[in-house]
Amino acid sequence: MQGKIDLLEKIQMIDLEIDSTEEGKQYYPLEIEKIEKEIGVKRQELDALQTELNDMESAMRTIEDEITISVERIKKNENRMNIVKNEKELTAITKEINAAKRDKINKENEIIKLRGKRDEKRGLVTGKEEGIEQCLASIKGLENEFLEKEEKWDEALIRMKEERDVIAKQLPSSLIRKYDSIREKRNGMAVVKVKHGTCHGCYMSIPPQLYIQIRKGSNELIFCPHCHRILYFENFETEEKKHSV
Image (cartoon, rainbow, N blue to C red; front, side):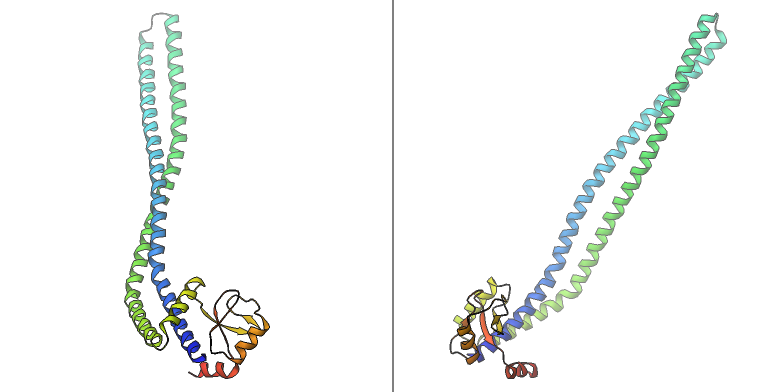
């Protein structure tokens, strides 16, 4: 049975390498998808900022038109002062001019405030646009990296799967199915050693009698009563043999 467990361990090591390689392949599409979502959010924010900026600029144009009207009122009334006939008319025109000047000053102050807000908003728009450009550049970089590595990954996966198949053919198909089932449920680890009476898969103590049975060796597979992984005892000679291979 130890020979079968050794073969299962080799298969498991290959499977873990396959998992690692496939995770590496998945990283790039997932990271690109993540950045694309980030771009979507940034574009929505940019649209909102652009709308606010457009509204500000529209308001500024309206106020500038109102200032122009105030200036025309001032000029018109100043011209009327040259043909005024009495004090009453002069007073009325003076009030009209002063009101137009106050209105002009108020509008100019509004313009100054709006310009400050507009410039701030333009800065936010520029920052958001630059953020989108950076994200697009990141995607381009990730795509280039992925293309550089994809062929090597695919070649490695083919090689590892072929190597796995060669080893798997030396074991009963029922044992491979059992191994695959455990591995799927236990985060990729189906075969684990027992050390000092503890399963190194779930790190829980196993019954003493079971530990003794594993140490003596068994013709049957022994499973952890807690995590149900396949257990084996790795003595010094077995460990030395593995490191020398």
